[in-house]
Image 1 (cartoon, one colour):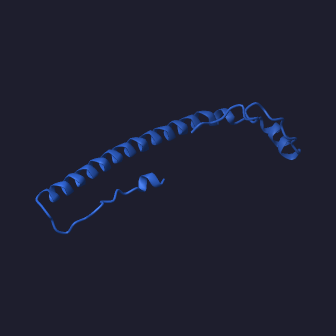
Image 2 (image 1 turned 45 degrees about the horizontal axis):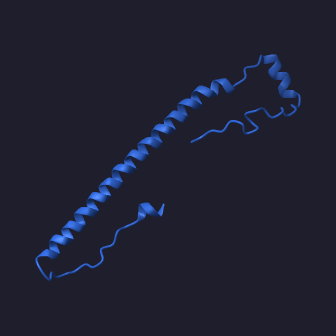
Image 3 (image 1 turned 90 degrees about the horizontal axis):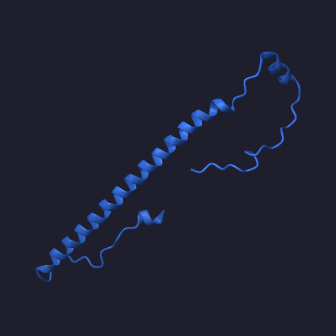
Amino acid sequence: MKRLEYERRVRTVRTHCRNGADPVMVLAQVTRERFRLGQEHRSLVKRVKRIEARLSAIAVAETKLMPMIRVDRPAAAAAAAASAPVAPAPPSALMAGVMTLHY
């Protein structure tokens, strides 16, 4: 993400002033840079908040789906199933890629 690491360089940095307008121009440039960085900071904070909200929504969806995925079996059937080899199940519509999860 090089665009976030971009630093605007000053063309010339004078250590002495030729006239009275030079310090004012440098101050104006610094003020614009400060304003731009403030805008970038605010937009990044908003983006982080949106990402955190989306992650929490995904976590809620996962907690709702987990009980649906578990298959409860009676104890006798579970013991028989554990000792016998299990043939792989045919791929379902979910496994075939029909449904995708968007982050």
